[in-house]
Image (tube, rainbow over all chains, first blue to last red):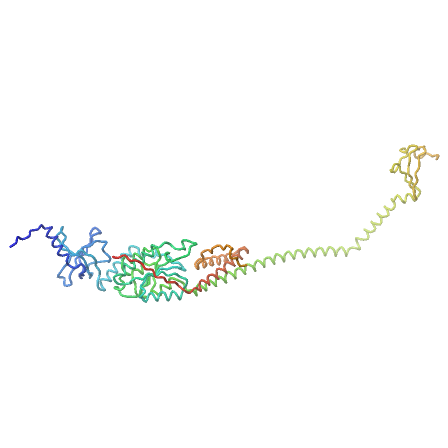
Length: 415
Length: 76
């Protein structure tokens, strides 16, 4: 008989943990949560109870592993690594993943998360951004196999044109969905801003879109799990690019709907929310053009009217002045018999006077004009003997020489 | 007179539908205000009709271009 192996407690537990490691890691345990506790906002522990209530598995995980809301009574499926914690000597399941199971549990988890996000303000209306009226470049996140893809594009093409659509294909449910949708959001948000922020450049693929569209068809809670996943909802909320979410039918709701900048009732409705209809916009353009034309013509006509009024006023003034002038002239003509005769009489009198003063007339009467050195002489004292004078008579003139004998007027003279 | 081949043509300013429509709205608003300088009015009138024409041309564009992007997803 061989000697029995003796181990320390720690060694024994290490051995047990090694043995436990051979339990497949991907086994799923299903049970009901009870005694759910969070310590120091870091450590989560709960009991996983068997349906019959006869067996209990103690579960342990950290806060940051948690991707769903849990509470007592919830039915869940857990995967993890079984082990004995050496410190406390307790057998527990170190949880890798926990998922609510069954409609009831899923609904409960959904409602808990909804409440939590609502209180955080993730659904606040005030934070929702405006969408551009005429988007040029958009990002589309959906499955190319989904009817949603075709519906969205068909309605979009009916309504608007000239857009660039950057499409990222993702699974909208199933294992890969959450990671792929998160990847799509990350990709678009990492892109550099586009030409609207860099005028003068032309847009190209690789520029950030103006709006993101996240759509899928309808489904139950399990189908929509990705759209109710906390990480995806936060990606929608935190996206720098505004997001339109359109899930399934009118009745379907997801938490992404509430976090979105704009909620569309269906994928087709998402196209309706994204762009206007070109007919409506065409109508608006025509109304504006007509408006401009009408107003402009009005102003021109108004200006013309005012100019004509001013011109008319001026013409009126000129006409009136002309009439005044005419009146004055007419008056003159009418009164000519009054003012003309006296004028003529005065003229005649003046002419007669002038005539009588004419020196030639005086000469006719026998007088002579004497000039010495070209000047008329009226005073005999300026004439000396032997001075030459010229004598002008009525008919002709003679040159003469002074002989002598100046006399004052009144004295007789011997020639 | 059409430009000769060697004549310099300055590059067109980036004009898309959104900017054209917005400018058209501004001109329409301008015409609503009372007084108007006729010279400016004529310029804006011509520009307005030009913009309306541009907008109608863009609206006639029917096609949307879809381009698929392959994104590398991080593995969990």
